[in-house]
Image (cartoon, rainbow, N blue to C red):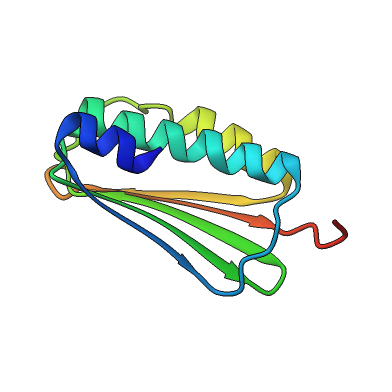
Length: 117
């Protein structure tokens, strides 16, 4: 998804998966898909980045998603932050966003892994 969006908008894209990947249960997979899609779409439409990075870190019992861009964010507006947070936190995860106008944005979502698949 990231590479397709980036190629449509001529943006350099990096994807990375680190750690021992395990199959995700459907709710975790869906949450990460929707959060990453929202973060990417908002980065492209509002930040106009030249670079995007999507990273998944598998750790014992958890997965972490990072979506990072180098775009210039406007100073006002939530740009889907509430929606992303509302997807992650009710699932028992954590959500954070770090952004400085003109210096891009980093979206981080962490969720527990259901290893009983």
